[in-house]
Length: 236
Ligand code: GLN
Image (cartoon, rainbow, N blue to C red; front, top):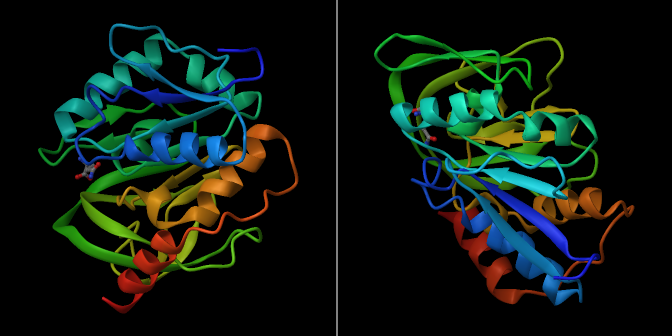
C-alpha cells in the first residue's frame, strides 16, 4: 500500500453487516481502481479501535441488538467522529443512521443514546417498512433518482441541524410523515436504502469519492450493467 492509496473504512462489518451493505465499500474501491487510483478497504471490527486517519467510511444496517454493540464501540473509540469533523465522508445505511443519531428506541421500547454525530432521533413505527424505495435527491450534485430496498422498523425524525437526502416518490423512507428519505449533515450522508445503495446509485458513489479525493467531480464511468439494473429497478 503506497502513501497515495485511498483507504476506505468499512466500519464494524462483524455487527453491522446483516444486509450486505459491505458491498458499498467494494463499489467505492472498484470505482477508484477503474480510474487508476490505488484503493483498499480497511475493515474495522469490534476488536479494533476506530482509526480517524482513513479517507472515507461506510457503515451498514443491523438488527437492534447488533446496532447496540456498534453504538457502544463507536462511543468508546471516537475515531469516526474525529474523521467526520475533519470532513471525511461517511456513508451510514439504515441502522447506522440511528446509531450516529442522538438516540434511538429499539422495537422493545428501550431508548439508547446514539453517537450524537447527526441531529436525528429514531422511534419504532407500528409497521415494519419493507420494499422498494425510489426518491428524488435534494442534494444539488445529484441529478438521478436514488433507488434501493428498505427493511426497517425505525422511523427517523430530523432535527434542525440535519436535512433530508431525498424526497420519497415510492416507499416509506424515514417514515415520520415528512416525505423525506435519508439525512445529510456535514460530511455524513445517511440513507435507509440497501441494495447495496452505491451499486444501485453510482452518482452517489462518485459524489462521496469526489469529496474523499478533494476534487470537484469525477468523470462518469460507462457501466452498462449498472444502468441496466437501474432501469429495471425504476420500472419494477
Ligand atoms: N434495526 C433497525 C430497524 O429496524 C435497522 C434495520 C436495518 O438496518 N435494516 O429500524
